[in-house]
Length: 367
Ligand code: AGP
Image (cartoon, rainbow, N blue to C red; front, side, top):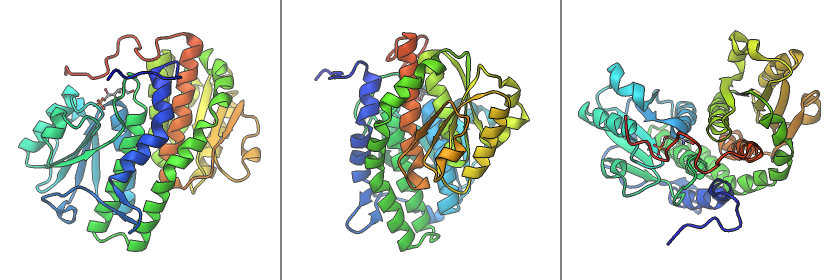
């Protein structure tokens, strides 16, 4: 059946709004809420024997992989290497015997990622894939197939596939941690609980739509935009910048908040909006001080946070999006929503072709 936009103006908008449902749908196959356990499909190898994980992907799927690296290292204490597919294959990567290579792709057909998968297989790696198209080439060539259940994604800018990837990757990190014996049952239970809360939190985040729409003209008027984040929210800054570039054609960069003073701060003046993604947690204060460095140079800060005492931190910002309180684990899933909405509304203000931005293809099947 033809896929319709329903009440939405664009497929991208529809897909942003579908996220609570499709993330819940995806989590259903990875969580056993009654037993409070994470469950993965049957596999013919054990994570306990995997000494190292290599994650390879492109674009937005790569940013999901970047978040997964933080989670796998933090929870499962397994060394993770991460690369974009187009670099991975040609740099003669050293792949440890018994290692697992993890490929993340919405389409399952991205040429660079598929070529990287075949290279890793030839090098004796176990192949795990997170894909949204279950009939795709990558799905067929996997030892461990971890499907996302986002449904068909039509907008060229990936949204719901991304948050579903994050949901699967969080469950994977917990499972690897359990199998490696570095996570207690109690910790697993907590992770299951937080992940189960994610769809409702994403729903709450969608309620900021109008507020974000109101501030979109400021960003739409800019030539350059910076996105800052730390820890697992650093990839979210990169993802926010990619979304904005793709559909609004505004130059944007995502940076680790602490790295900004090593270069990009030179770009800051009163014409540069800086989007600061700063969920509460141990890194919040540090990010706020990076934000103040921006403000001291006249930069226009948009703060996205759920921290206590946000009013104080947000002094001098041009806008503050006060997010629902969420556990840091699920922050990347929830904070994806406002960054997607911001890119969307800016593109609408600019009048670009939101669903089919110039020069881009939904699935890149050439290397
Ligand atoms: C994201 O908005 C992009 N259009 C693009 O970066 C995409 O994520 C990339 O091409 C990877 O595609 P895949 O997930 O289908 O492999």
